Image (tube, rainbow, N blue to C red):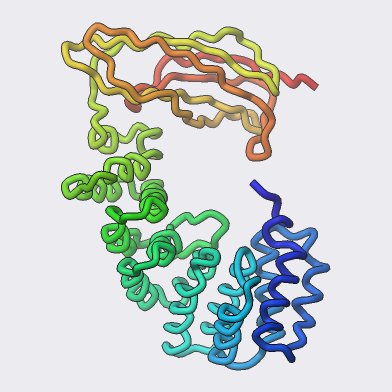
Length: 368
């Protein structure tokens, strides 16, 4: 993934200045130009916020004037696209909220929908949701009928409870059913881009309201199209890893009599940067085929010495009566930016249809 300065950096500021000067040649944009020098130490969202505030200072006046400038830039400037849209849409939402009144609020929603094909307006939408959730959702539900897939995706993505990089919307977290009409309208959408957002949204809800998600997915499977099974599988992925009985049953992973052996470790000591190899087997003792989701759980050591488990996918397969499935995996402990490894005791388990077994311990050592 690109670094923050490759997404919102000096080139972003310059492109935004060029676009706004195309729309309003006499505007000075001093704060925006100065912001370029202050970007370096900031994280991505902080960079967007800095440019948002600079825009609001450089373009004073009422909401209508601000929105007219933004629309003129969109119409006239080829550079008005990409990551500069994030601070622009955030400024649109902020100016509408500060002015107050429903006219500015409604037009801000419309302007976000106009701009979202240039770069998703999902982050800016959160401010409007937090300001007036019910009014925003009423408009957003209408977006599900848009001819533009970007607008339809915005309806789902912008209202996600746990949208990455975005501020939370307490009203959505407290009332997860509020966004379900949006998902119900989009789970059979023609666009994979939209359907994937729907599945991710459903997965977000599952982290706090698993039974609601299973009930929703069950209703979808009763009125499916050719893509519904995939949407449901992706939307239930966290519940499957957690071994939620309702999610497993809905996906066809029913209980079975199994003989699970392992994991058998190739070594009891692993050096950071290398991989842990293990094997195992699953035998179906029933007289009917068993559809199985086979995962494994690595219990990582934390800085305070406690262990925390993370589930990794291994395979999904049907095992015939009397059949034994032999499994193997090399699990990497290569250093990555999203995980810090702590030397000491660790453990690994197999998980079959949500049931864990065969905990095996090993020691992770620092190779430095």
